[in-house]
Length: 375
Ligand code: ADP
Ligand code: MG
Image 1 (cartoon, rainbow, N blue to C red):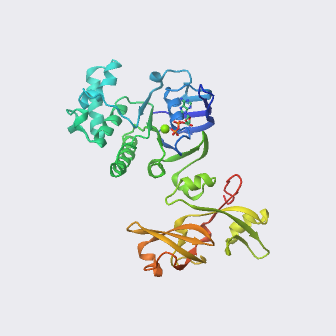
Image 2 (cartoon, rainbow, N blue to C red):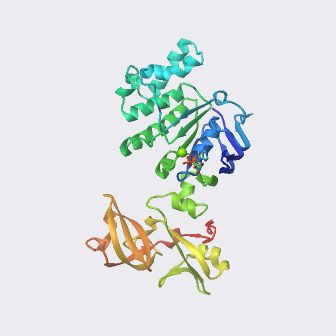
Image 3 (cartoon, rainbow, N blue to C red):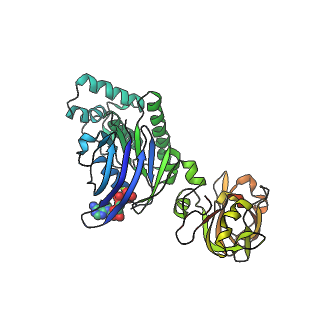
């Protein structure tokens, strides 16, 4: 186990493409850190630089107390698990787990105890005698994780390890990996993990902290709750949360009485504390942000603003319904518990409905650079 420091890390590929622009990040000893961002934002590039599989163009990478920029992958004390786990097909699970240790000249008794320990941690003792083709996708992925565990690395690196699995299996592997991290901590052998995913649900459920990336730069590093409640900018706000936060460029209207978002005949006055933060901007463009759960179909919160809208369609998720509607000519999604639909029940496309907007929970972003104006 070790901490990991990225100091002004940059990557320029041989073709001149600048993939990473001076990334600064500290991953704490024993921490589960997730890198999340859309495809192409340089998650894999960063991970591969940490692993030593890709050269570092600028900055300093420190594992533990050692600058490892020039250290070969093998000497960095890391283990990596990929999306394509590529087990050796002609070897049984036991040998797949033991292979790396054998190569490294680890004594046989030691190999044996480490393989048994990993198998126990991953609840796969019963699989040790099987060949890879006799495993399900989830079991094979567990073996791939086991191969990393037996190495007892300083740092575990995961690059989208679950993206080849179906949705159900992904959900159960998510829980399993999170529990594994906690089990290792409980046993006094905490593992430092950097886990890459493009899936914000995986990021939110697994990460102790999450690093949100966009085009090779860090947008925000924070706990899942902080990212959700206090996104640094409109990009993070839009990336984290499902359904996505409603965001629209609207007018900020400042009067002596109040400060309000204004669009298509709708006025949404801000609560005093938030209004005070925005008043000095005066009238002008601003980006409004509203999470779907803060637009409700029935009056449920004191101080909510009533807004007439037109129903477009409803997506029934079972316990809740995503209601798509037009408010002031703009599309909004509202997320409502199935038993809180009120008289939306039975309404159809084109029908009008009065929604309730909880302005205490609204967000405002600079419409030019996206910076959150209310944190
Ligand atoms: P992610 O893992 O977040 O999807 P990558 O790290 O794979 O993103 O890629 C980041 C960016 O670097 C992308 O724009 C990609 O096209 C580019 N890239 C990746 N590998 C190379 C390479 N070998 N040469 C040039 N550009 C590359
Ligand atoms: Mg990738």
